[in-house]
Every structure is written in C-alpha cells, then in structure tokens.
Image (cartoon, rainbow, N blue to C red):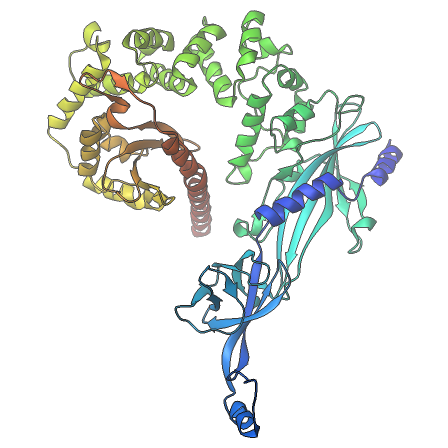
Length: 607
C-alpha cells in the first residue's frame, strides 16, 4: 500500500489547469482580489530650467545655464505598466498635473489650481497606462510585499478524485516588480475505502516543477490552516477560493461524495465538506435530494464567521440532521410525502434549522404545517414565535398566529406587530383577556398601547444611551445617498416613533441592552426620519430583528393601505450589515478574546 501511495504522489500535478490560471489572473488584475496596482515613489532632486527657444545666441545659452535650479521631485513607478515618470513631491505624497478633462500628466509640478496632491494610500491615475493605482512610498516595499490565497481545484488522478490546493502568490517589490505564481501547496485524495489522505508539497528549489509530494499523517483541511498574506489581520488568513467547475466524478472515488453538488451550490470549503462526508457518508443523500444549499450554508457560514481558532473544525457540525438515519426523509424527521413536497422549496440552512426547532417544540407537528407557516410569514418570523413559545407564551404557536393574522390581513409584518403589542400589554400590567390578547383590529390596538406608553411617566435612560452610542458609534456609515445614524438620547428614539407612527419610542431598554436601534436616513437630510432598523447584538453573530418605516408600512385614515420597503433601502441595509457590521463585530469579538486571555495570564502570574 505504501508503494501505491508513493507512486500516486509522483503523479500529482505541480501546476493548476489553464482555466484556473486564467480566472485567477483576471480576478487579481481586473478586480484587485489579491492586492491592487501601485504607484511607487521616492524623493529625487529634479533639475529645472527655462524653456529653450528656437533661436538662441551665446548670451541666450549663458542665461539658460544660469536659469537652472534644483527642486525636490518624486520619481514614480507604476507596477501595472512598469513605466517610470517624474512628479511633484510633498511630504508623504506626490503632485500630478491635471488637464481640464481630469487627465493626469507626468513631469515636475508644484501644488496649484492645475495639479492635485495624492498622499500615501490615495488612488491616482497613472499618466502612461491610465490605471487607478494606490500611491505608496517605495521604502515600504523595501523587503517586498506578498499577497497569498489558496485556490482549490478538483482533479482526477487515475481512478482517484483529488482536491488540489494551489497557493496563489503575488509579489511586489520596491523596483516595481509585480509577479504572480501558482505554488503547489496540498492535496486531499479520496481513497477507495472512503477515507481522506492528505499530501503536502515540498519545494527543494525555487522551481515549482521540481516539487515533491509527501504523504501526511493527518487529513486536515488545508484551508483551515493559517497562512501568510500581507493584507490580512496580523498577516494571517484562512480560507480561499474554489474553482466553480470540475470533472465528472462518475467512475472515480469521489463519485459517492456529491462534491460536485457542494461546489455547484457555491461551496467554498471543499475540504471541510469532504470531512463531513467521511464521517457521515449519508450526507450525499441530502445533497442529491434538494438540500445541497442548506448543507453548504451551514458549513460555510460557520467557517466564514470563525473569529478565532476554536471556531474551526475539519468537519463542521450540522445540528439539524439526524445522523443515525440514512434515508433523507428520516434524517430530517419527515414522512416521505412531506419530504417530496419540501425538497422542491429549496430550503436554506435557516429554514431547515427553524424546522428542527419547530418539531422539537411541537412533536406532533408535520413539515407541511411548518411550511404553511413559513410561506405565509417567513422563516424569521416563525423563529421569533418559537422564541416566544419557549419563553412561556404558549398561545403564540405559529399555526394559531398565522390563522389570526390572515383574518387581520397583516401576514407580512403582523408577527412583530403582535409580539410588540403583547409585550407592551404585559409591561403596562393591563388586564389580559381573550379580547385584548387577540384584538379585533391589531393595528389600532397596537397604536393605542403605543400612545399609552408615550403618555406614561418617562424614565431617563440618558446614561445608557450615551454608553450605547460610544459603543456602537463606529457603525455610523454612509454610501453617499443613505446613511446609518445612532440615536443620542431617549428623545431621539421617542421622536422617531412619533414621526413614523410606530412603537420604537418604547424600545429604550432594548436599545441599551444589546439590541440597538439604528436610523436609516437620507445623507442630505440626516435629521428627517425615514426607516428604523433594529439589530440583535447578543447572539453569536448580529441578527436583524426588524426594519420598518411609517406606520410599519401602513398608512391611510384607518391604515388600510400598505406599501413595501423600497428595494434601495433593503439593499443599503444588507450592504451595511455585510461590509460594516459583520467585520466590526468580528473585530470586537477577537479583541474581547485577547483581553480575556491577557487577564487570565495576569491572574496566573499573580498567583
């Protein structure tokens, strides 16, 4: 067997396929997926003189020689085109001449109306190739700068299926050199017994063609092993890219893995999926029977949101699957009839996770009953109701709530409206009977209880509002059109609720206890109420609770008309959560972990 694996190692490729190289290089140089282009500069003395005339006598030449003077300029190099040029120099930056059309020109120039100063980190347009590049002091690249990312590719080696991992390495140095190479890194091979075997690449020289593949004792996921990259936090990163297309797995050892279905559903951690399959081969049944998206989202979200090492796992758990079963409908605790209907719905990980909680809380319920509720009020709303039931509000079972909201014609946003109404009713210690618990007009009852709270004696939350603002003020953000604003005082929250005619004015306690309120405003009119967003910061990752506008999207004399949240607002909030909120939350989580570990070391040292 050892000889077979040694002979197989000798057959492993040392370079990726041409399609992968083409896609990766396009991503790097066209979309800057691995560092961007640079304009390198350093200070250099530049000789200046008056212009030479067409006809010059000896006296003119003597005057021209005397007009020569030296100035500090900047010698620049564009890493995209490799051309050198001269520009003006200022401390920590360069000066480029600009024409009326915005085009930049090379040559020494001083600050003025016809020139622009670009400091370190600013983007300037190269006057030769017209590429936008980052202005960077040449001395910062004296030791070079390396960007790296792993790229996974599925290949066949004889009858074996292998996932090859290539380290895509981009090197930039102070001379303007900008090169990208594909270095062999690791390989995961599925053997004939359904076991994973890992190989690592060893380079004995600078030539990748002389790479030697060596077998490893453990089949760890290469993407979950930290590697160096200049732009990453602490210069360490994990994860990578996965080639979206590969060979047909039929007739090879990967045929039963459903790895092609995982990658086809945009899975980015093929090694982690193979470890799940190695432990639970029946996962293939879910992947082939309509639940590939749910499996992919469960695995990838755990690894994408991993803030530190303990969050990583070669085979991430999938808690909503009963691994003691083999048949897919039994794995999800459904009947065959229910499964045949449900698999057409393209459930995601949140839907199937919600179903797992639903059947745990209502053992006699079936999946079609759950799907009926999910289709009418959405999986997120069903989850909120399950939380309420678990907290002791047994009468808020999803089936009963859906039936009630149908009569109210308030299916879309009625769940949050009903929950808010019930909580305010309880906090106000008002008599609870069948009429008040299930009002004939939910919108009107909600408005009455909201007005009751507005008229009640207010308790000052200013200290809590101030600390909340300090904690989350880094999340204020704008894209130039809309902006995210934090309330400063309780009065801000009350004014928002009064203007938009909803109950956010009563959310002071929630705002100050980990479920903050954010105002979505127009950037040009940040003082004017527009939409209100609430985020739950108390969970493992931030979760959006609700997003509402005027009257919770209802208007008219009796609020009989409703409208949808504009797609522009919805897209802005999604972009803010993805680009601002999630990175900030991960940084805060990492900082808290570092602080705790430092305190622990200090306590141990004191002991």
